[in-house]
Structures are given as C-alpha cells and as structure tokens.
Length: 400
Ligand SMILES: Cc1ncc(COP(=O)(O)O)c(C=O)c1O
Image 1 (tube, rainbow, N blue to C red):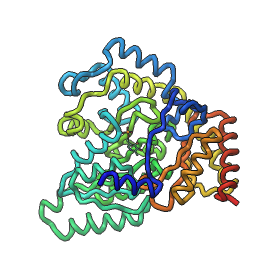
Image 2 (cartoon, protein in one colour):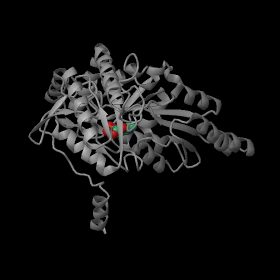
Image 3 (cartoon, rainbow, N blue to C red):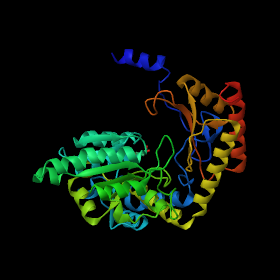
C-alpha cells in the first residue's frame, strides 16, 4: 500500500527528498560539494549565522546548558525565556507574549485552545498547513473564504455569523466565538493579507482576528513588527498575533503576542505548550539577540526590499509570469510540475539554488520556482540570478 502510493507520487513528479547543506545558511551555500546562491531560504535578513547571534547562543549554552530538561511549567523555564517573552511583547507592542516550540505548534495550540466546537473559524484558502491543521483540531465549523477576497469574507460572515445570531436569540447562539484567521504574508504567493479590511469586518461582526506573521516578522513594517506594523494598526485591534522565530529571526520557535488575558489563558490551557519540553537556552538567547538586531539595523529591511524589487522587475521584464507583490517571496509560475523541476535543476547547474514548489504545497497547474531573497544577497548575486532565469527561460520556452 505505502509503496504503491509512493510509486504514484513518483510517477506524478511529486516525490520529495532531502538536499544536504554543507555550510551555514547564508547568501551563498555549499550544497553537496557545489557553491550555490541560496534563493530558497527563510533567512530573510541574513541573521541565521550572524556572529552576535552565535555568541548569544554559545554564552547561553555555557550558562544554562544545552537542553531545557523540562516543560516551561515544571523545570524548563529560565530567565532567558522570561526575557524573550518580555522582548517579544515590546517588539509587537502588546501586553504580553508566549513562546512555543515551533510556529506550527503555536498555530495548533491557539486554534485548538481558543476555538471550540460551537464556534466558527473563517480561514483564507491559502493559509498555511499549520492553520489548516489547527482548524481541524479545534473541531469548530470552518468556513474557507477565497484568497484575500474581502467581498467573499463579508458574504460568509453575514451567512454564518449575522444570520445565526438573528435567527436564534438564545444564549448559545449569542455566545459562540467567530474568528478570522489569515497568514500575514502568504508563504507560497508572497502577497500580504488585507488586514485593515479584515479588522473592519471583524469589528462589524464582533469576530476575533488572528494573523500568522511567520513571513512578516522582522520583514514587514517600519520596525519589522509584522503585518499590523506594516498597516499601522494598533495591536489591540488584532487579537492574536502569531509568528515564528525561525525565519527572519534566524532562530527557532513560535510565538503568540496579545492581551495579558489571552497569554495567561494559553499558558494554562494550551496542550502543545503544557506538555512539551521548553525551547533550549541557546535557541531562546538567539531569538532575543535577533530581535535586538532587527530593531537596531533597519537598513537590513531596506536592502531586502530593494533587492526584491530589482529581481521582481528583472523577471517581469524578461517575460516571466511573476505573482505581484512587494515581499521577498517571489513566485515565478511555470505550471507543469516536471517542467518546474527541470527548471529548478537547470538553475542549480548554473549556480542558483531555488528548487521547484509543486502540489500539494501549491494548487495543481501552478508549480513554480519560489524565490526567496535575503538582505545579504549582493548585486552580483542578483545579476547571476536574472542571467540564469533568462537563459533557462528561453531554453525551456517559458519565455519567448
Ligand atoms: C505561514 C506559516 N506559518 C507557520 C509556519 C511554521 O513555522 P515553524 O517553521 O516555526 O514551525 C510556517 C513555516 O513553515 C509558515 O510559513
């Protein structure tokens, strides 16, 4: 059975296997003896091997050891964990924050803890897998709205919230919770959620808003605070701001920032928080040092935006179908999965690491090369990336 399914996956060109990195995550990496320009990492600001972060990790390990040796509520909580959460709430301008072991776990935790089977979740159709799984775990009624389509969201809120409240004046119908959840920056398309409109609709329908800033933390907003920061929305209008420490912050772990009562509730009720060993001291110290750098060096964000703009413009001028946006996630649509894989292999032969992304990560027919850029890419790197795309695009007749 399993072997048969694997054969099906192989035949469909969707088989996945590892690539092995032989150097630190940087703008250029060593992959299986080859030096390549890295265009597929989430290390947006180039912090994952920054000397300050590595020093912070080493110092923390020397002082607190390598493992935390217990869950936060038993023995795993250190001064570093407390400091990281305090720094996160300052960074996100919220009353409080809590860290989880991964962003994936944070989504599972929040959705399964805050939302119950009588409640309703409105979820963008392109939300990350961890949101989808969190929705399933909550057992709430899940209503999927079309990607970033605010008219569709409004229609669905009318249908599932307004009508339910109006048609049933009983206490049960009045007390259910409605929650709208969206990625801040969509991981595969690289566009940004229309958060001000979502917040407006949420206030009208008395719903909660939850935003997953995995790809926005450190990247979007004047202070790198994420999607709310990008739109200048005050923190109290976005009930749950979730994110990961593993992308632009170059560490590992997930976080939730929000009101004190929300964070206290999660600390007391969220099973993935209560029943899992705390993040290790080295990782916690790394994330904290990264946040200091993000605030101190806004030029990293500016450089990232400039590079992303040049590559987008360059690819569009060459004739590629590039999904519109302003973030460092640049999807170049190829279509067929095998052709996308072939494109990725040829890029690699020309020194650019940007493997194809295929279903089920993206919808059928939209297999793509998903470039992610870093503040530490040089102008020469950008030139080489565009040159490789031009040559392979012509060879495979993706461009005229
Ligand atoms: C939108 C989104 N949410 C959550 C996650 C999960 O974060 P982590 O890798 O920290 O588990 C990811 C990353 O893969 C993501 O892209």
